[in-house]
Length: 80
Image 1 (cartoon, rainbow, N blue to C red):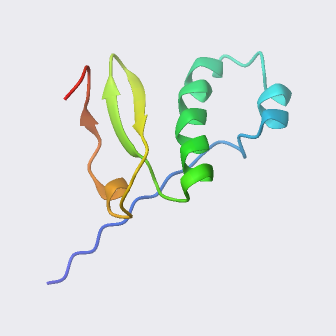
Image 2: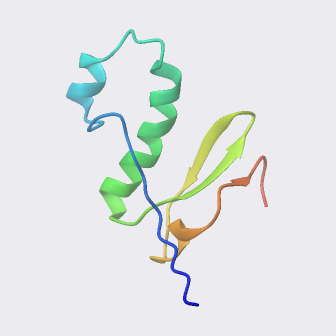
Image 3: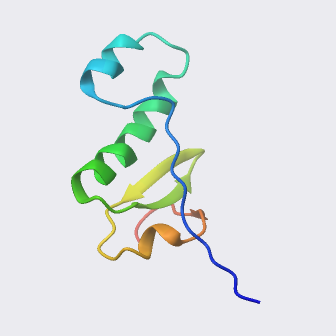
């Protein structure tokens, strides 16, 4: 059987500077700030970034290959 995987990146809203101001003051601000980093990387490079977790926060690395965003979410504290 053929198994296909593809990344799905979902954001609560378009994370433009205007919208970030509009929704400022929400209890979700710290979480949205993390997401915005990934959102900005995608908007710039048009590739899903690589995502890892460290201390309950997302870390994003720019993708240099279209398949990079297709990785499983992994722990990713520190260099390596």
